[in-house]
Each structure stands twice: as C-alpha cells, then as structure tokens.
Amino acid sequence: MTSSNDNLSSKLELQKRLQHRLKSRTDTTSRPTPRTYDQLPQYLRQVLPDNYTYIIKSYKEIELEKFEGAPTAAFDSTFYVNIASTEAIEEWRSAFHNKTGTVFRITRADKVKGIKVIYHKDFHCRHADIAAIKYMQKTYAQKAGQRRSRNTNCQCLAKIRLEKSRLNLSHPCEIHLLYNHNHPLETLNITPQTPSIASYE
Ligand SMILES: [Zn+2]
Image (cartoon, rainbow, N blue to C red; front, side, top):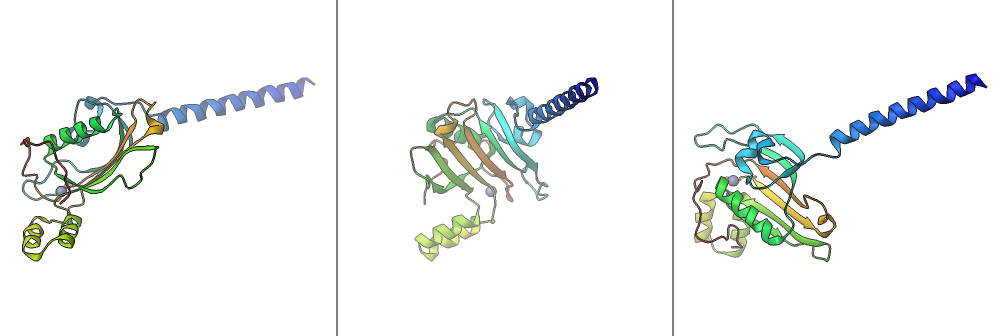
C-alpha cells in the first residue's frame, strides 16, 4: 500500500515537473512579448517606424549588398503591430516610406474579400521586375523602355493583413516584410507632398 502510494506521488511529481517544463517552454516561444522600438534588432530599428510596438513572429537577417549606396539593413521578418484600422495602416506605410525611401507599388489589393478581412494588400518595390511586367502589359514600348531602366529585379516586398478575428488583440495587424533592396534608395529622407506612396500604374 505504501509502496503504491509512493509510486503514485512520484508519478505526480514527475507529471508536475513535466508540465512545468512544458509551460516554461511555451512561455518563451509561443507567447512573445511586444517590443518597443528600442528593443528591436538593429536592422528592424533602421527600417520600422518608431511610434509603434511590435511582436516579432519571425526574423532572419540577410547578407548585406556591397555596392556603393547599398541599404544598411536586410532581413525577412513577419511581425504584428499595434494597428487596428485601415487609416492607421496607411499612416504606418507613410512613416515607413519616409524613413526608408522605399516606394511600394500594389501587387494586389483585397483579393480576399469578406466580412472577416479588413485590409489585405501585397506590395512590391518599384524597382521590382514584376512592376516592369505589369507595366508592359498595359502600355506601349516607348514607356516600357523607361521603366525597364528602373528595374533592378528588386525582391523587396510587404504583405499587410488586418483581420477582424484579431481586433481584440493588442497587436492585430500582421506584416510580412522582405527588406532586401538591391539598389540605392535615392529618395531617402525626402517627404513627398502627396501621401500616396503606392499607386496603380
Ligand atoms: Zn527595391
């Protein structure tokens, strides 16, 4: 009787310890804490607007380009921002543009329409090859030549999502940002008169 009791209590003890270990593991991975701008990795600090807090879902640094005037940050990251409306997303995009000089074009907008989705847009750098392709589909060769000279086949892109199911969370807006320009950002620190930083062409 005593031995089976001992057995049981040691089993319970073991279970408790396992649960504790599991819990502490869960705490560090699947419940990330929001970071203020100052707590972000250096590359993100160079690029992300600072008046927000971020929850980083994934973050991978990319080797920097070495040419003259190459951007000094390169990464692939998905993060959540404390943004809960379309207007606030546009403000964030505007701040991002002003800070980095990145000019985004819309690759596709609100393709998934429905009551669950508030904002769903994909963007690509205006130096991307896809811009040239889209442009040439719509226009004639004379202007296409102009566009082609801008095309460096840049891969920089952003995917921004805001879904109703996340609105009750502290950081509802999800942004996937692949930041790896392969050209200098010539418009750096110049604020355009118009807030339209992305447009259809
Ligand atoms: Zn680019």
